[in-house]
Length: 332
Image (tube, rainbow, N blue to C red; front, side, top):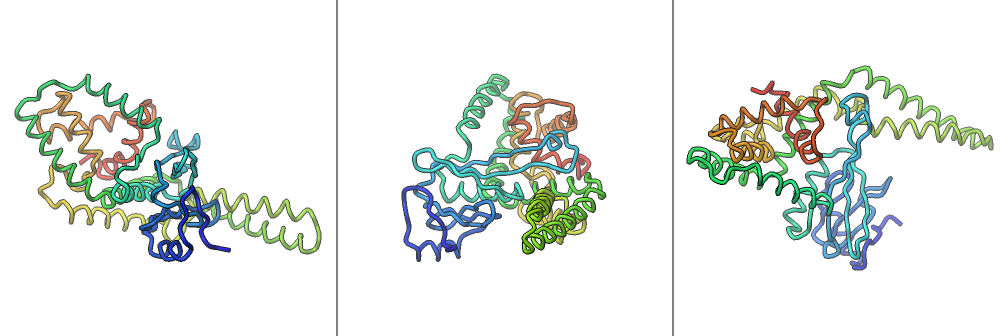
């Protein structure tokens, strides 16, 4: 009864699926095996399987509460992985941590290099952005700027080969920044509500056993409180506390330092492909001539992007990944 359920028109024999799922690379509630993707349902991890040959498109979708967009309040992003298969059908998988989606997409880029990792709408926006950006670029750079661009292109290509390390750095920075900005009272309020939800749910179940139909209301109310605040990522847990988050940030910096060392074009705590890509744009726009100048311009651009500034979606997607790194290092 717990065997994975098939998605798509291609099927695999049960023994193959069983062994493949057992050895698959796990990313949050989903996984990538040699034969198939293993996707979650609302309550069960890796409950569905989709043979790799049926995959047509995989991309990330992020929903945000109003508080998430403003940077205020308890709730933040709600990440999903969307998998498109066969004749355009889709399934959407909810994740608790956005970095798990990013890691899975980075891994799929290696396993399925021909499968698009953006939605059709995102691809169209990227083309439009590239066309718009091309008009801003200089036709010819100075020898100094061209040398700096080539240095950054080479460094970016190097980082692109290690997405798990760079994604870990960005995720750790985001988690630490979020933890520092979250009012500690929110965590304990959420914990109290979850405990109250457990008590209410237990009381409701006890009522139902005595054939008191009012118990269903207590049960539903309790479960709603538990699900709502357990998914808000503010509960103080063994993984979600300041000490562990700080340790992960330091470990992520150590990992990137071991990868790039001291001779990298930017300080190792900024070693992320998006940072380098923005520096390359600065050079191509003629706003800087050297690597150092390009990094300074990127810092000033990020400082200017406050909560009151409205930007396009693609700009927002880049900024939310890299700005926590700069804030934690005080732009040094």
